[in-house]
Amino acid sequence: MKKLFIGIDFSKEKLDATIILACGMNEIGSREYGCFPNNTTGYRKLCNWVKTNAWNTIAEEWLFCGEDTGSCSIGLSKWLYGKGYDIWIENAYAIKHSSGIQRVKNDKADSAIIAEYAWRQQDKVVPFEPL
Image 1: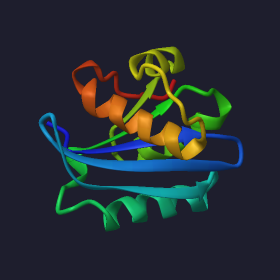
Image 2: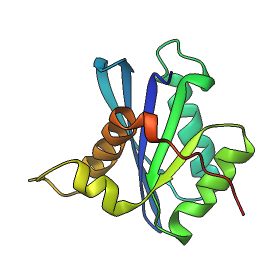
Image 3: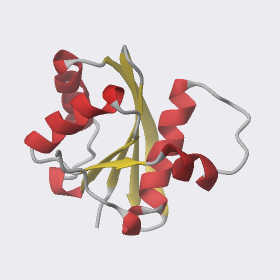
């Protein structure tokens, strides 16, 4: 079972990420937020940030999740896959309609919604595999 959920909001220039630590259906601790460049340097910084905020979990207990944004999401997805991390690239419609009405719309809030989606829907994970 996964314990650490990393929601990623992809854009051409940056990656906004939120970490949620959970045990079953209970959220533990405070959420962490970070912003990184959408390039190889940013991918490394993102992973180091996750390791720093992993609360004694191991990589096998982590789940990275993001919306399928085509070219914006493919680079990090392939990079994480190559490093052996679990990443779930989900249809944006499914994530949007799972969260109900949202009053705040920004990249930070979107990354939190994606992390919550990964946590609550983890039984539906379809792991990313490059073509």
